[in-house]
Image 1 (cartoon, rainbow, N blue to C red):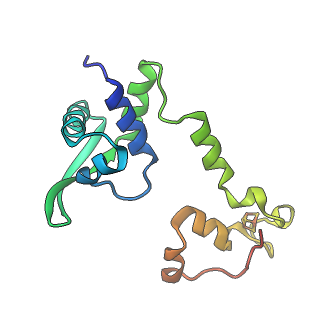
Image 2 (cartoon, helix red, strand yellow):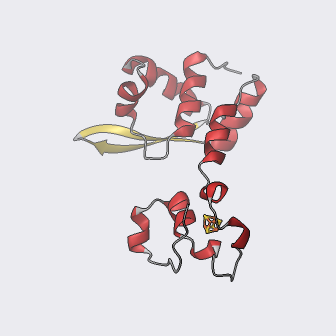
Length: 144
Ligand code: SF4
């Protein structure tokens, strides 16, 4: 089996953290890794089935949208003693959950006045505030 080098591991971890669409031609600028090394590594990761690349045009240039195959990448990294998530990343993800700092957490339940189903803070956390205009659904204003 082809082994993963430091760049491969770094790119898998980096891709896993990205929330927006990742275009291959943006990766060198965003990671500080030169374009040739990025291209070589992504080609290898694609051949191993750890990422998926879809051809597209971005900023008038042909490139790829790059997506990680989470399950395969996690399994592959586990085999070499690595993990997709650093403990600090996990903490940051948990620390962002709005309920942890919400003063209404003890009064919040499904069907209650404070209801996670209609909570704008949870909605924004999961889908982004911009989606709220598209799907207006908040009946409460949860306070932090
Ligand atoms: S009101 Fe929203 S943020 Fe607060 S505990 Fe309920 S779901 Fe979480």
